[in-house]
Image (cartoon, rainbow, N blue to C red; front, side, top):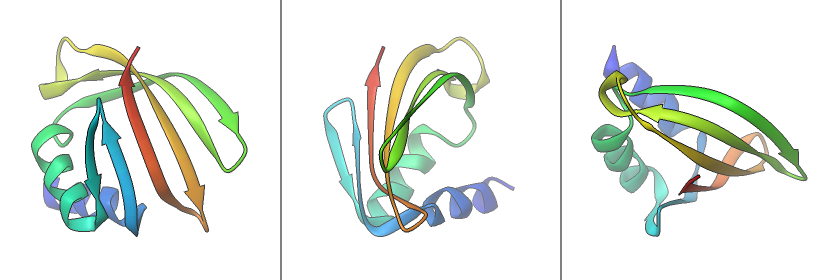
Length: 92
């Protein structure tokens, strides 16, 4: 099941997408897949607020790695042609 979730998550990104996680940059499906496998899959994400912007949205979320505890963060999405072109994650 985790592999299917990982595939679906990676497929939401353009093949040349960039993801910035607290200053660390990942570009393209392979790097985003490695990041997601190591840091996202198995966690619990709760959306606290959705702030639409031109060509995307910014979410205030609570992310709990491993499903418990966690922290608040902002996830700023830039979307192009229905897929994520850039995602910037920062601690709130």
